[in-house]
Length: 486
Image (cartoon, rainbow, N blue to C red; front, top):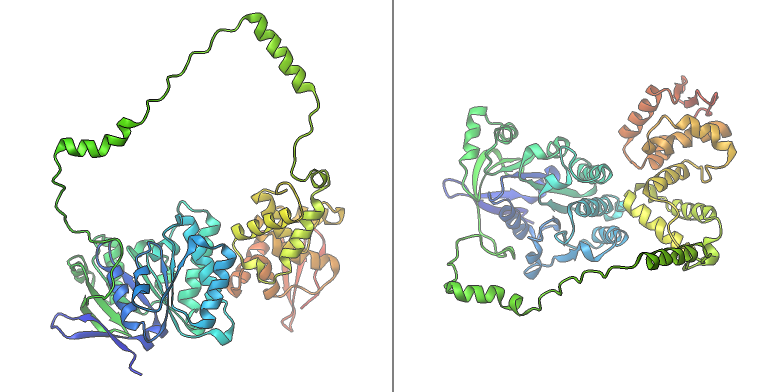
């Protein structure tokens, strides 16, 4: 089967092709300022390769939903589904090899990042038997893999960045080929951009972006000015799937278009000023005027004192507060909290879910146990869930007092792995392995686990020992205990 598709023509009018088979192995980065034609390029790429490979499009602006009118793509409006449903849908997409457009335009930026992280993680975590080849296109990638923190919470930013890093760094072995587009290379995380081997660079004006684009294309700095002079829809291409030398490409036409319409000039309306005023203000003028506020009548001093006295008498009278479940609210909520945490941790993947999803799940479980309100706010839940992942479900138990005091020097996100180590030391159990610490920390990266252990050791919270057989044991200085070697 021929896996080569035509995306445009070069300066001599010769067709420029992209080898889809090679693209799946080497990934693609598209860069260009707003209006340079990035979305048109991605649309051309998607249309031409629609019959060759499964496609998954992360669409933050709803630009690509029109592909479903001519091709077999399924549009998923993210705002209509919960986080759990989005995760389940991501797994089914890998299983059934469906081409899907995840439309995020109804969500705010933080919800878009959170939804994308959940969706990409579901694609990434699919079972090995579902690792079919798929082209994953992410438009406006700088939103999901920012180079610096912004207005969104740090938890959401890290989750989104980790998902994008997995896609570009580790997705190839799972059949996922990232094709990402960004307005500015300087805004895109370097470890995400660096994993692409194919580049299509469009018009850009800032020196820092031109310099990075020139470096990626292997051009000298003085040649970078050519990037500033590119016309709309023209790109410089390079990579094993495109060309071994930089080639200028004029992107070809597409069969579909965005629903946003044209940005060209249109004739102004020819209505007379008076007619325009009538159209603008007709309904407003027929609406009733607001009723003027009536000044309160003065109250005699004796009447006012009597009203105060009656109000105080009413306030002193015992009144039972109305509750939805009075028989449950009268009880201690602690057993319900422990039960909810135990049920959540029965799912082996719960440690890898976003914090917002976990708190929502916890809230639902509390309501199912007929609690009138959620007994923990988000910071309290974060700490209790971290302790529960470490095996401490009841922090009020006196036997955990010294352990929690030793853990007080560490950030909350490191609480779970430390508690897991300390509990193993108290019980004389073998040292937890990297997989167990990863589940407690919420990561599958061995490198992050190594850095975590090194950080805790630098803080003086633990001491790591390795014997000649390579077995590791970890001591807790403040407790005077150590785990068994493992």
